[in-house]
Length: 259
Image 1 (cartoon, helix red, strand yellow):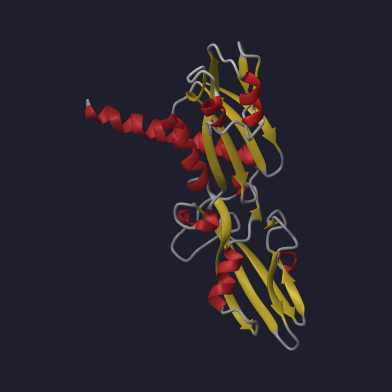
Image 2: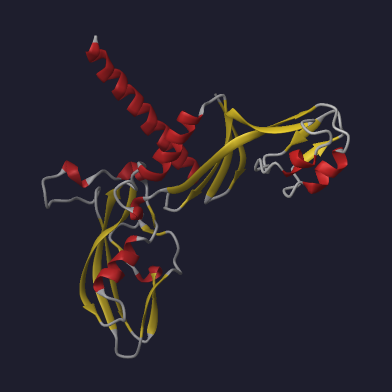
């Protein structure tokens, strides 16, 4: 099994996974989206709210704000007795503003200097003349499978394309008709870039029919990962791999009981 990084920046990563199978690829994708622990606001104590938004809507909007945090510094609240928390499992945010103004994420004051909204300029609500907003919000770890506010990433994959040529006569026409400009061929040899989405337009144009074949390789996958939380996309992939590894070890341990 090999991984080749195709594109990468602060919020997105694209890589080629070779020597795998659809079952492994889909398990990795699902874990990245739903089982990587993500810090998000779970509850808000609103003492004053003169804005046009109901308390429930306001609390929901704050819950969807992505937060920057160090995953190694936090643990789940279930390690404590019910109703008790600590600085390693919960972060408090204070917000107090009077209108007229737009309330932004940068107005949230965190109890932990290492935890803050990923973007400073996300609008929360607009306050008009004489309106006031005062609240305290509390963030803790959770998983995307339990609530969308804890979803770590938008993850997708596709089969890596493979191409075969056999007696193709109109190679230039096939190259021109490709909507992604992903195909290159001289009639005898051909190559296709990762931009190919297996639409098949070039194959339909091939003369004679069947002289050009482009198929998805069931052992190679192109992953596209976009982080929608405060965790870098490469770290999301690594955490998902660790979680999958632990699941396999747990299964192996339970399977030994069958003997």
